[in-house]
Length: 94
Image 1: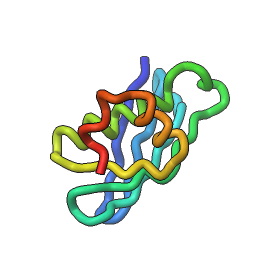
Image 2: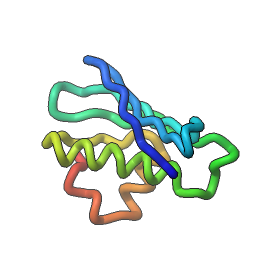
Image 3: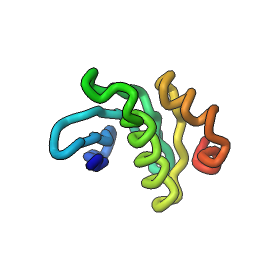
Image 4: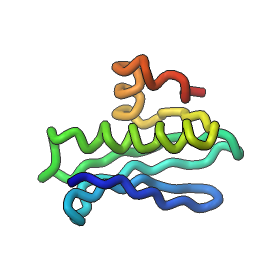
């Protein structure tokens, strides 16, 4: 089972994907003020490629943004492509 766990500090943070407790991927972000953050990197462990882990990381960020009225700036190419392919996520874009 895939679980997304968030780690957050005042300036940076990440969303970590755990698949049955094993590290499957990581998406990092940097705060740009108090109401938006920049997704700067997404990586998925090779063993989990093609299993939708990267998209689940983006969806975890979107869920967090919606719950906290925060906007997202996707600079990471993977995150940017995911937003471009999914119109239903555009409500959180800055």
